[in-house]
Length: 207
Image 1: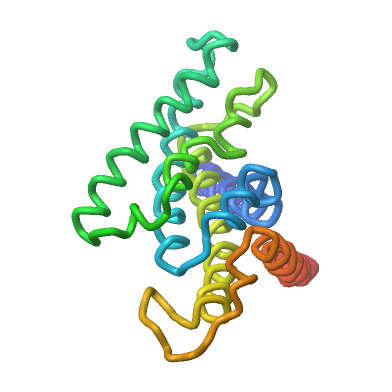
Image 2: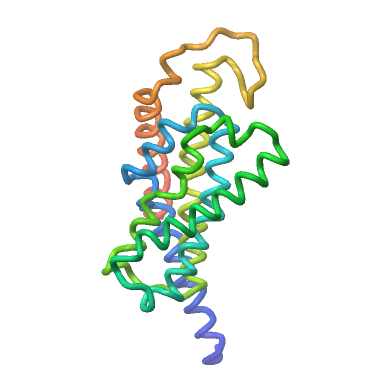
């Protein structure tokens, strides 16, 4: 294997390590901001899908900006800067999604703009946040967004099906359990699915 091939292999290995670490130990989901967003905002599959799309676009953008601008932005200005960037991304995506799928973003309510302030965005504002290469930051952001979707979509599935008797807003003609639509039920489901997810990824890592 040539030196160039070895360097390329090492870069790919590092990226896979970052992806796996971010996917299995995701601060976005286990942190208060991510869990609250899922438990309170993901009561329907449509809502969970919308919030997952927001994360998929916001997190890589924040990661790239953090890589390129971390040394230029004063620490006390970082929170305002990153939240402004993600708010702009969420705003543009909201207009786009609502024009394509009318009412999809409106149905999420206040939780759509709250997606702009999540655990990973705040993590990037810390003075001791680790500095990544641009490509690594994109990989980390995508991994965290996918992990958010892996937790949010099953939570929303059970809540909409068993709590509302519907899926993607289409009634299935069954009576739902109203309590499953409440935030406390969302936190319980979120905890159970995170535990299952960690158990499965832990077994995969052990192999």
